[in-house]
Length: 130
Image (tube, rainbow, N blue to C red):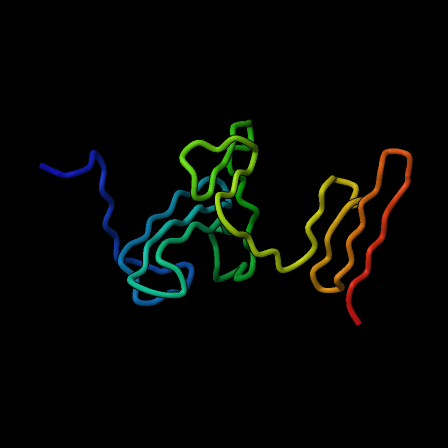
């Protein structure tokens, strides 16, 4: 008897270009494909990627991936996320971290700038660096 209700093993095309590959599967709908797979080693052991289903014609057509777009919390390193995104551990941001949708408050790692703005347009700028 199988140890899980559904187990997929596949050795076909590798849409992400990783090697050595153990398995992958794809779900297609319209022009979009959702690929998932596992590797034996680096750069990562498992992956999920959305893309155009015709990579030969659209080799760089990769699409955003929504997680719980209709609601619910997402946790990384936790089994009981208490917020929309709950990270139990450290995080690395290699760009600008925005705290609202208008970019009025942010931390910019590259320029070492921090801006915190209030409702009335009052802001605090801090610049640390060269």
